[in-house]
Length: 370
Image 1: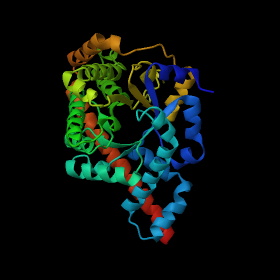
Image 2: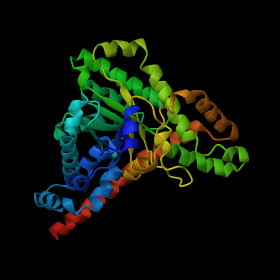
Image 3: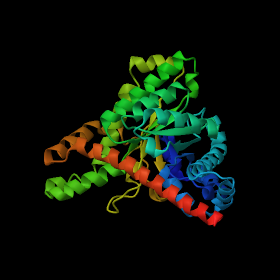
């Protein structure tokens, strides 16, 4: 049976995606159960998730051995294993993709994070991943770095659906939406069917609180400490306000008339990092129409168990959210400094996870050839 809390979240306009992917989840039927019982309608992956899956997964051994014996290099082996999992997940979600006309039933795979500052190579790999997976419901994840923005436009212009990741700042989010609209305009000029192109913009939440809370503790005043745990939600709510503004402009109206789809905001990093906060905070407090919440399994189960879904918790809070960011600046926390740091750290973390993934697979390949 469908869980009442996740059902209520879905009915409020939130698409629930699982922030996890592994061969074990696919082959044991766990994802199928989550579709049926937890209203899960999509899956996201990233280098950290793949690193965790392959490091503990005996289910990969046969493929890894065969690829190694065939003379494949470590980058090729990782590519084959990860795209195979994404392809299988895409097949699993295909009925949802079809029933939602492409809005949900989506599976995301990220370009190599080492390319985050190289526009041309990012576009090249996005096209390659799209071709190799060869499923209509795949989303190619491109980071919202400065080099990523023109890559987003170019990839959308090719008719390829994109999940824009690692968005922390409101200015960068507006640039991401502009990159999407530019891509749609180019795609339309090139004769692509805009109704087939979809995109989400992954706005990170909990990492904002982690960094800002650390700074508030260092300031140490009662006023500063009173602002803890509020910045992530405020930032996300103001992002939704920007979404509403951009997708009500005449520019968007022209594209919508041509069949274009909204680029939906996606709440990412929604697992609570501080145990002092409610474990469903980044779910229940970010409910609005036309959004995605991609949850780690633990957060999804907490929501199913005790998530109190009580309608829209975003659109009425813009003024308070804006005031909160002003308050942070007043006590000495620089918003610009924080979001710039988080973007840099985000890319670094994914690069590190990718390096660990390559190292782990290399070690397994050496065992096969020993």
